[in-house]
Length: 356
Length: 277
View 1 (tube, rainbow over the protein chains, first blue to last red):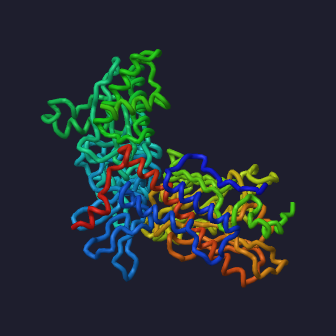
View 2 (cartoon, chains in turn brown, purple):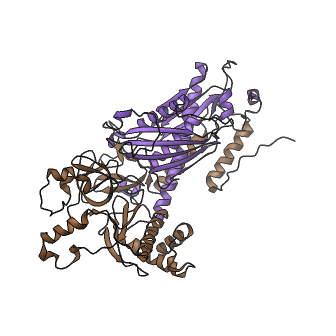
């Protein structure tokens, strides 16, 4: 009895069309009983043909090295490059094509945060230098926060003095978290931050969540409102949420400040003065009730569940997710104390959000 | 254990049942680690490699992923106008048949590190990220030949996942020849994608090309082979690299397509619509 060699079967069923090709090719091969060294093999040419097909029909994804267009009317944007002496625009990242008039750019599926002027970011102080801080904002480089770009105690209009330089660590020390705005960009992509507003400054009374993989559209997106105060369920009081565009999220207990009062306008700078000096650079947490802590933890769970399940993080999604999570906790065995939103619970949450 | 290469002439099948031009099963995944900037997992047969990319980010004693790596110039690290590519490779003690401890200063590992670093630095657009550093850390979980090729492929995938702009994929594979150097057989067939057994016995080389072009970025040959056989081996290797590129590309596309479907990434404009006006 002759020995027959069966063609290897894929462990996973693949589409009928390529499967047929594979088996027929190997059949002819074994019948010939040998292989031609010089012959062009069908195996090498076929996959490329299939790849072409998918680009034009199934998905709009381009991958590095893929030709986007060779029409000279287009200009190249981010995520593309042009080889010398040609007009062909080639993608340099894996992502989706975006077009702005005649500018073609590729938005990567995922990349590090690239700062833009006006972005609200949450950052962590990494290094203290003579006249500035270096802040990790999840970008390719550390951002810098000059001493002259913060609100100094004793009124925002006060001039920076040498005493301030000497006690620079009393404002921000290594490891401190802050919320700031991108004021200026350097040519090499480095950012300069400022906190010259009562909205910005040191963060306390809360929890930090880093959402990776932003800048490509997933995770936190630039939106109209990145900071809001919400009423927590189950007697949790008010909670502030700060979604930094760089993917760093801050969730904290809401603390009433003089700024929120109606009469602060009349008092003007004097009021602000006190406010700045007393609370602005304190690293001491206020007293936080257990209920508030629990709701902060629940919100954090919502944000991580959104990211794990590939949903975007913005005010609408977080609020809907939070209400959904509260309801899920109500019906669960643990009652409102059940804040676990990982694994199946997270998937359930994501499914509920996608459905509505 | 000596490999009886004489059987090849009878059935034209190699020890693991492949023909001369067949790759082993290549299985790859990207975004295996949610917390990393980019990550991948790659299997070429029984060679299994994991890769994590951090960066581009500002280099510093505190922020670095620790451990020495190739390409690190010490004090001047990352000070230039280009991002620096730093590769560190950890070969697990249990990865090969005989349990071996690979120290940090292992010469073989150091050479692998600098080869991978140079190959990727040639493709990555490092000039876009001044004063920064791309950390690529590779973990070898299991070895069965073609280790360098698997390392390069895994690192490429992780860099694509990290969204670092690059000229094209760097795809690598190995090629060999069916008879030993000593046999001096002019008619020996070239072989594609050597496993460990073949690698021990037969002459072989590792080749990596830039995307679909024939531009070779890595060519490593550590064994003796007649120069007349080299051309055939190289041609087969370059051909294999193109197959590998297609496989890697399919993995990335599949992931991208899923992300578009899930709504994580906004849909872009189609290539066809663009050409209309």
